Length: 388
Image 1 (tube, rainbow, N blue to C red):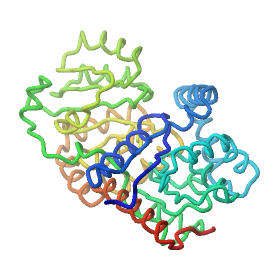
Image 2 (image 1 turned 90 degrees about the vertical axis):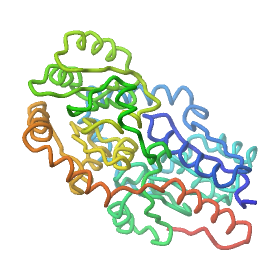
Image 3 (image 1 turned 120 degrees about the vertical axis):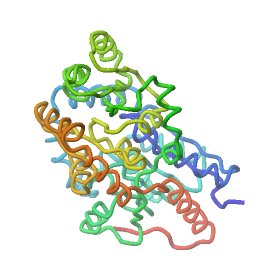
């Protein structure tokens, strides 16, 4: 029987990435130890429902209409030390509610996929109100102070780049685990691509471009880009996923009626791994989970205007790794599309091969095993906590 009897996962629904990471680790742990009781809490929604609604609205509006302002805020808060007044105030939000949750649930380990609740648990540990092991997964290839909190027993990061950045901030090496960002097992399976093309009505003789607008369909200029693809002058077929943006789906449903190239428009898709499996190129932002899923499936990426902040950092990591190209304007999107689809399609194969060196398929399982180890160390009385 696993020493990890009860796991509390603290997440948030700002985009899909934090929740998907939580689900991936939950599923991996359940496969290993079905007897483990796992509770996933949308921390912001459960503790601060009004603040959650306001913050989520401001977040979506800022990345949609004022990304530079969001980037300024992200950069301005990236170096705030855990001991600062503003960080202590942030960590104190919901401290009583979190203490109640911990007492009621009595977890063996707390695992955070969102930074704010990790800070609150850290604050409780510093005040001596709990000794529960705390583990955090950083869901982007970026280093930001909001993820770093005293008395965190394990950090799970996506790459050596993030590990080096955390070491530079004084985080003990033994607490940093380069696992990759956890993804669902569905993105690691082998697919019958011919059957999937038939399922989605796609041809086998022309390249497929998958356009991902993010969970809330906020990719800039997606309408204009899709119109260009729908009527591309060279053979191509287009699949667009607009997420939960119903207005965008309605607009593209109208545009696709006059498309000269085979095109499909979908809203929120739970089986997005099937669409990735049949795609030859993905046009997307640079969200941490989406790019991890694409890497797992060796899907070349064309990144368009990533959100300043964590997505810009993700984009730099991908371009540096040779698995993606970056476009900062619609003109550059057109240039990259022509290069990758028409002029130099072999570049896509090179990008696929490079993905083999970057992807990490077993992050969820590695994280699950470490969480079990933390629970075992706690039960044995081992000194698993530290200060920094």
